[in-house]
Amino acid sequence: MKLFDVYPLFDIEPVKGLDCFVWDNNGTKYLDLYGGHAVISIGHAHPHYVERMSSQISKLGFYSNSVQNSLQEQLAEKLGEMSGYPDYSLFLCNSGAEANENALKLASFHTGRSKVIAFRKAFHGRTSAAVEATDNQSIIAPINRNNHVTFVDGEDIVMVEQLLQAGDVAAVIIEGIVGIGGIFEPSAGFLQALREMCTKYNVVLILDEIQSGYGRSGKFFAHQYAGIKPDIISVAKGMGNGFPIGGILISPQFPAKYGMLGTTFGGNHLACAAGLAVLEVMEKENLTENAAQVGEKWMKDLATVPGLKEIRGKGLMIGLEFTKPIKALRHSLLFTEKIFTGVSGSNVVRLLPPLTLTHDLAAIFTTAVIKTLEK
Ligand SMILES: Cc1ncc(COP(=O)(O)O)c(C=O)c1O
Image (cartoon, rainbow, N blue to C red; front, side, top):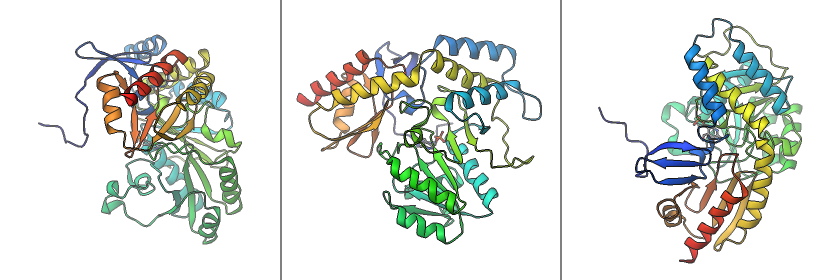
């Protein structure tokens, strides 16, 4: 059997990782500023993570959600405390799309409505409601085109209010910082206005922090820069440092009911061990603060890179928009400088390294990108 060929692949096979580096099957070492797409939060093969995961799998990797699993409670407790949401509750699932799917579903159950407001450039995942709220027609299949979602351009709060006045909107969903769309931060004023509108019209505000959450922005959640509290927050990616786990943080106003949400694998023992290990390392090594500090200096240094149109982002979620396409630049960075980076569209390099990145490692990239562009 062959693989279903949906991914354009670089001809590199990483076989080993340690902190901010990966090695391919020829022993070549790469600096990982992509983190497997914002997934590697505490660094590859972190010793505490390896120990916690190995110890858990040697005892019990999985049992179903029909029995007690105190690891889930420990994870919820620790996440509530570290994220600043101790009074919210946690529903665990396996991926980002699934987290948003459950967030939208819960909003719909709660309000009895079915319409959603999303934003241009948004990416929320590839499943049913999540993909409908994703601004990319090419990944929305006919079966997902159900006219639930209206996309609002930019920060048009007037249009948001007009849509909310119709009385059929269940949720507004927005990324803490737009990731795949090219690293765009919503302004604090816009998030505050959305919060106010959603409260006024009794609509659920969902913050998708799947890419921008878990310390990446320099705060636990990017929306915390705006000082607002959403009704539901979706998380995944960095939550498990590579082990598939996602979840939604749910405000106390939502009553839970047996059977309302559910999953076979969500919240399994190994996933919880991964989730706990990540939070323990983040806390012990002050990784959110590190992301803020390293990112701030890095963005200043990156301003000297030639050919830049704009630098956007916060913490270790950085977008470098160039005036010209960056395909050749990325290729040279990977194959000559041995540095993994991410991309958005044709002109934006995305930097999403592990949150353990040091100033020195950041400087390696700055030097390499300047050298490559000056060639
Ligand atoms: C903001 C955001 N939401 C949702 C998703 C979907 O996550 P997953 O690929 O785990 O389903 C992603 C993935 O890149 C994302 O960046």
